[in-house]
Image (cartoon, rainbow, N blue to C red):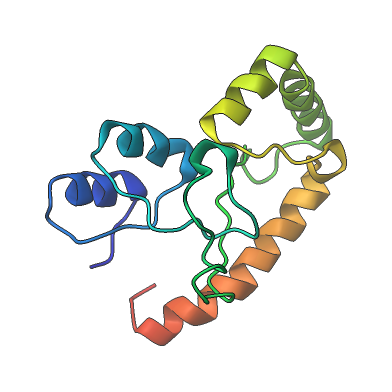
Length: 144
C-alpha cells in the first residue's frame, strides 16, 4: 500500500495494520527500544552504533538492498543566492556545535562532512536520488 509519508506507515506498522515498514534509524530507535518495532536489518554498508546487534542487509545476502535516509533544508525556488549561502552557513555552523552533533549522532543521524553540506552537494544528491528511485516507482505503476 502506498503512503504519502513515513509517519502513517509507522503508525500502521505499530498498530499491526501492515507487516513491516522501511523506517529511518532516527525515528525507529525509540520504537525498537520500546518493543513496538523489531529491526530486521539496516540497509547500509555498515552496522549503525544505535542498533549494533542488527545486521546490515548485506550480511544475509542482500547486497543491492542499500538505501540511505537523508534530511535537507530547502528554500523556495527563486531565493537569492545571498540568502541561500547565509542559510547554509548558519546550518553548517549549528551542525558543528558539539552538543548538536552529539545529539544527532545519538539519535542515529550520520552528519555528512562539511564539503557535503553545500547547496551544490545537495543538488547532486537530489539528482542521484531522483535518477535512482523514479524508474523503480514508475515500474510499480504507482501514479505520479
